[in-house]
Length: 312
Image (tube, rainbow, N blue to C red; front, side):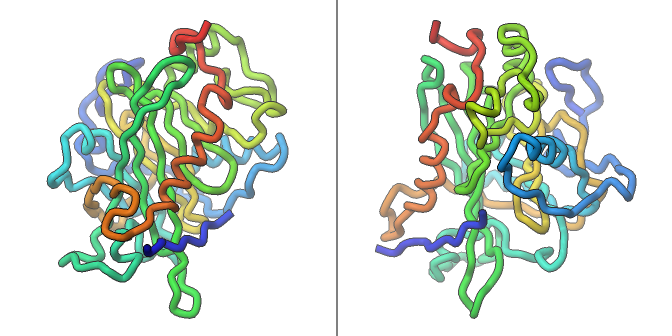
């Protein structure tokens, strides 16, 4: 059985706002809010090791990109609800990785690609359910591969993605960045944060949000920012750093853009994640990525308010 060998490196108004004119982002097109030229930075951020490093992650979530590529789903042969919830990728353009092969298919990674469009990006999706704070909730994950760099003609691949936990109406309330190295990044809906603040009070310094546990109880977990509640269920913008390839932030489509300009506008294919062992391909790497966040469930690493819980 073949194994994918991965070398993993360590508008429409939000519900809380008044309606505004439909923006390009709501139509699946990139927006550019023209931040000042000096607002774009490219310095990589070190992994969190102590409480003082938290500020770096909070600040990274608001970083502006000067130039980026925009990727959106083609929607071919995929259920509408999957297309609606799929990400809009904003990948920073930065040398020497400006033309890195993002969204490689499993077949291409194994040298088995027979597609007429081998360079068309592919993003895989996976649906499941989990009991969180006593409530069974549906989850939807999106994952992708990219060719980070080559060493002696051998590919060094990276696998990453994110997973949404949905409420009973299909709105995402938690977004977890999927990565095999710490820290664990969890984005939270504004409605959940508001309920947490009302129930638990303000966060304990150096945390910034009420859903976050004290640093001493969950040092490798960070809520980088709170996402506005969208007017309807929809996937987020995912911003990816052009140097470190880290996910710098997620944004609701109703939130202001953090990129000055776009270079390319490209479609990606959506494919269901194949079952384990399908077509003689081992998917252990994908499964490891999903299992990593299940080792400690959400209700063990953040404070979930009673309004979103069945646990007394």
